[in-house]
Image (cartoon, chains in turn cyan, orange):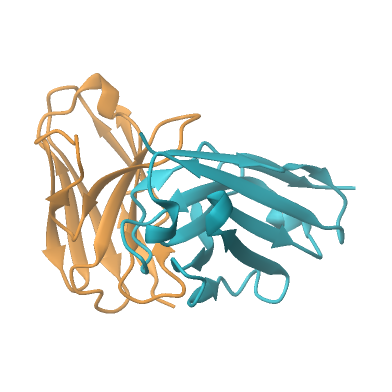
Length: 120
Length: 108
């Protein structure tokens, strides 16, 4: 069974940093691209960032480019999102998500999310 | 960036009735279109990919159609568990892949 468990969310002041982690299990992690997708309270889904199986292809939404960094450690079956210079508009539930291929942005499994609140 | 527009924003349907949801892309996405279902307090779930292929375990009452810029999700006979928010997503051009704003299917 595919499991994606996010952690690292919390309350943080504007301008500060936070690192999200996603522990993956139930599949061969290094065979698949991975993504972060967020959902602001009461709003729709927004893709944040994605990374291919070998980290050779990485993409970011314009809203986070230059502030967020996605990475993965295939030896630890883990995905990360380093978030710097956080803003109030970054407040959201952040989902870790898996693609069914080594690259690409189709998502077949989602974690339950970790909540990030940016507020003073 | 490709803009995905869903309509209607809210669809009121009685149980057992048919629901038809629309998704339009601002430019062609070929058949690289997915539909997701999200219930309150839950993560999204993949329903349809490739515009018309049901994901594993998805009931046959869910069907998808379309290509290019116009897509439809049809739920043939709504069950109580189908009342939720539905999102379309294009994954043809990325980054970024983009989602529609969602259609809420509510009980009439």
